[in-house]
Amino acid sequence: MNTLDINSIREQFPILSRKIYDKYPLVYLDNAATTQKPRLVVESMSEEYYNVNANVHRGVHFLSQQATDLHEAARERVRTFLNARSTSEIVFTRGTTESINLVATSLSRMKGIAGNPEIIVSSLEHHSNIVSWQLAGFRLCVIPMDDDGGLDMEAYRHLFTERTCLVSVTHVSNVLGVETPVSDLVRIAHEHNVPILIDGAQSAPHRTIDVQALDCDFFALSGHKMYGPTGIGVLYGKETWLDRLPPYMGGGEMIKNVSFEHTTFNALPYKFEAGTPDYIATTGLARAIDFIEGIGMDALRAHEEDLTRYAVERLSGIEGMHIYGYNPSTGQMPHGVISFQLGNIHHLDMGTLLDRLGIAVRTGHHCAEPLMHRLGIEGTCRASFALYNTRDEVDRLASAIERIKSMF
Image 1 (cartoon, rainbow, N blue to C red):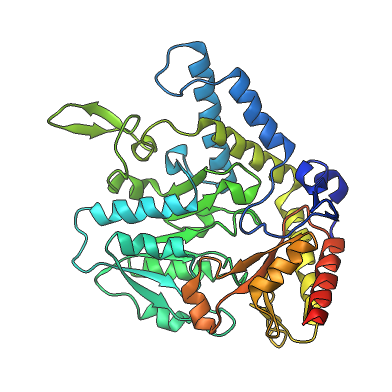
Image 2 (image 1 turned 60 degrees about the horizontal axis):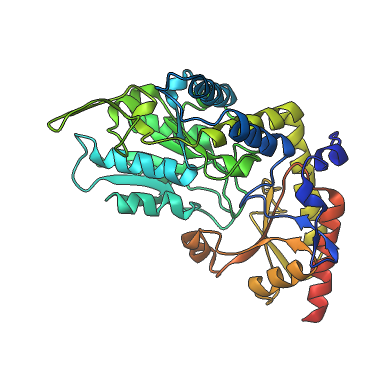
């Protein structure tokens, strides 16, 4: 069982006290899409807007310097959170999607890229880790998976060619909750002298991340999935790689000198941060990191794993239930995410009826259509957990599903 003071934690999220349709207390189980925000995050952003709002960098006046200090302090906060070697390796973006697009676009422009360049991805990927590479002109080579989401590592080894530019894989599947063997993926990529990007959108909110220990070349995350504001994310990149990549966008901030004949670019990480950054959101992200680390990542992870195990136990007892990413014969358990189907009930019908009972889940293909095709389905219902969820809410979910089942 967990040791968190859940009541105290929930009090920091005013939205959790809402009643849906003026009748049912909210059960929010859509955390893999976005988490709710604690008072600490929202109030810190309001405070900065009211008292320290000024454009950052190059301003000589007091407010600009103070805002710049907060913005760069947030960068250092992210650096310690990820255990990056330097703040030069921390690039602020709008989220995981833009982080991946940044690498894809810049890599496609880099000198020395072979003709018909290839990127290795897995069958588990979110659309942002598929479409970004297609738009940038890369051919995708896909690591196959088994029915439970396990990657075929022997097939992975044979995907490398002289045209392979990069490996880009999810850390934890947003659909199945399956954790990929990142250490092995990184090691094998580096044996072929190929860099690797890790999509950490579903891992960074739930476990300690050490990019130096992972030895990944790039790591992407989204602030809004880890109790921070929307529209802010991070791309970690090894300095050696960020130095080699050309800029993603042009404009102010990312330049050193500009003339009509020639432009030279700013130092890292500013080379990749064109225009005015969302310096208010970076403060919010820093406070979100303070919040989760104040609770403790180990305690947070233990609580969420307990909820997942309990939910699997409750839901798997319902006749006709299928939970994807769960295999009782091998003991495989999803991480913080339960994607399910119940008999022939359409996932949209299930999600709509759960909503009428005050329970928020996500339905559909979850921006992972190729994975759905591999599983032979159109979509699922997905319940995903955060540190403020409780066993009582899992009980409400199970009871609601039983009630809906009786209707069909």
